[in-house]
Image 1 (tube, rainbow over the protein chains, first blue to last red):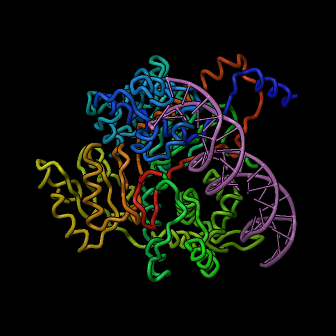
Image 2 (spheres, rainbow over the protein chains, first blue to last red):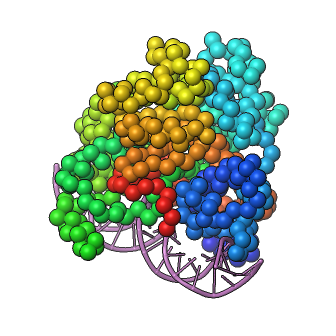
Image 3 (cartoon, rainbow over the protein chains, first blue to last red):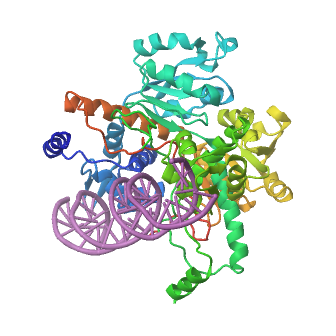
Length: 263
Length: 263
DNA sequence: GAGTGTGAAGTGATTCACAGCT
DNA sequence: AGCTGTGAATCACTTCACACTC
């Protein structure tokens, strides 16, 4: 019976395809490069050229776009301005987004001062902390640190859906719960704890030391590989397109279902 | 001929298997949770239990470990302390690692103050900036900002292989080149520019706004999905294990080959 | 000629399911 | 009985290669 309803939906709706999470991340990268091209007065760009800058395979770029429609002219390329707008619209980043920050430690303070958010249309609208001693302090930009108790009202009033979470590990889950209760739908988590969120809420992790660990692994592996093979051969390895770049990703799960219930 | 040599190598070397980049990231997550278990005096843990905490499929965890050996006891589980050490050793994070920081803007300053690095065994040994005005300034922790000219000598002297890059986008490539010249093998890049590195050097990107974009996409998709389907059905979506968590990754390419040469 | 759009092929990662040990 | 270790199956993502359009 469930099967049946889904079948119908699949047939009737205009191909609800699943978009790889990596595609979304790359769209964001493309958008950024398009913005730069635009400011250099470049009018048209080919998939080869844009892909080269973003460090991806040109076919990958075309495939990424093809999930959403046809935006280029064969034999010509893509209109820089219009492709940028299209991608912005796909991502939902045409207009400015309000963000709340929780945690005013070193990371939180650094993020407040950081100009990159505003450049991409994200604005910190309120700052909170769990440490009572921090409440009432004025941060850069004039925002005064508030108690988390004020979050629900504020989030509702300004319909804020994004939060940056920069509190100590052991408080992360507890604060996340409050964020979600207040209607937050997306959390950028700087604490190194995997938090559990209900369906409809997305989380992205920013975990510096994990990334450093992975760099360290690569370095030590390179060393042992070298030792092991004595003289480096001239063999070209399997990677086709200079491996990855960022890579990020996902953790969404927008349709119901709690995280982490057994198998 | 290339084929042939490779074939032989594959047969002779002890199964040089390729390890998914995601596996390395997860190892790092497991290690962190093991550390916590250890401090709670927990002696033994099962793959089910550890996987639950790390928010991954238990089979995934076992498979991740199986790339490197057999570390558990059937019917029992894993010894917390020894598994932690094993993973640390795989990652190469048993001993402390020295790191240089380039860029003393808001992000750089925040990272210096951040305690998470030291906790995981990463220590900032020197701080550099490209802005002459910043040189000579004393940062938190007593480090004095140096000119990049001093980098090669310092990196060599203390054999530093890791760098955190937190300079403006338009200077990222240029600074990365200097880092590489000085023998740096791993770069944690906070600037939103994809940098090109030669083989043997790894890069990891930390790009806040891209992650926010992806959260925004999820949020707007959730909204349109809801509008489209009217009443939310009870259908369980495709995700098996609550999708991902962090996700990170890659970009390594430790064996030669420049990044981004056409196809 | 140049460059997009896309089915098909290829590659890679995750999960299953169960044999095998303690 | 419980839990690991792992080949096989599945699922997901990427790249190829070429038909098609400008």
